[in-house]
Structures are given as structure tokens and as C-alpha cells.
Amino acid sequence: MTTLLQMEKEKYGPRTEQVISVLSGLLNMDWFVNVGTPHYRKEAEEAIREWMDSFHLKQYHYHIHWLEEGTVVPSLAKMNLAKSPLWRSLFSIPEHMKQAAAATGREGCLVRLADEIPAHLFHHCFDAAYRAFHQYGSSVVKTAVCSVMYIGGMACAWESVGDLDGWGSNPFRALLRVFEYGHWPLGMDDEQLYLF
Image (tube, rainbow, N blue to C red):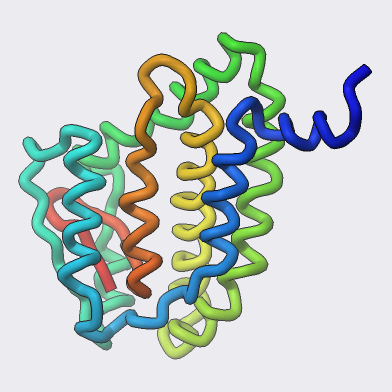
């Protein structure tokens, strides 16, 4: 008979420990502490390049563009993910994860992860997002929180299928380092990756 402890150990599949490790790092992060500053920009750029390299995305020739105070709102307003070839290549990843989980009978683990992880992240980053971005309006605060929930959720989901063929090294760990350096990967358009 399976004990409750064994069930909890398998909550997100055989790699629950790895998922919890990523989540733990996210829950202990100092969110957005360096936005708008020059601190750790070089390191954040290296993390972005590593993330792109892990997806073999060099062909897109994206430029990293650092936003300054006063340019966040207009930059978010003009961003259109639908026009980004980079986003189009990344858009299908959740569906591929879902298919990989289903093929191994783990769809319940992935559904549970999708239900629980974003809620944990919301509660741990909202106050920091509000402090950092309230002067830009509620839509910027919401966008910051949603980006944490999405990127953090994807990093945890990747860990949950990381033992399956084709899912080895987790590229979202590199993207999480941008947050670790206190910055925010806002998004992309047709030729720019925006950081703040």
C-alpha cells in the first residue's frame, strides 16, 4: 500500500524533488530588486543568451534592449508576441510537455503542477512587483506577476518531464537567473528582447 509520504514524493512525478528545488529557489528570490539599475546587467544578458542558445535560437538575431524609467509602459504597449518568430517557436512547448506527460501516464502530475505552482509564485512575488512597478500602473504590476508565474511554472513543468527523452537540461533555469539577478525579462517583439 502506498503511504501518504510516498504519494507526496511523487506529487509532480518521479522528479518531484527537482520541481520542489526549483520552486524553493523561486519562493526565496528577491524579486525585481535591480530593475532600472545597472547592477548585474551583464550577468542577466549572459543568462538570456544561454537561454536562447539552449533553444538553438541564434538564427533570430535578437537584440537585448534594456528599458529605462519611463519606457516600460510604452514598450509593453507596443509588444506583440504574435509578431515574434521567437515566441512562435516557443509557443508550442506547453503542448509538447502535455503530450510527453500523457504518453507516460503523468498528465495528472502536470495538471496538479499547473494548478499549484503559479498560485505559490503569485503569493511570493506580488508584493515585490507592486513595490517595484506600482508607479507604472496596475497593468504593469499584473504583467510582471504573470511573467513570474509563466516562466516559473514552465521551469517547474520542464523539471517534471526532464527524465523523458528530449527533455534533458532545463533551459528555463537560465531564464530564471535573470530574475535571480533582480531584473525582469519583460518580453519580446519581432527583433528585441526587453529587460528591465
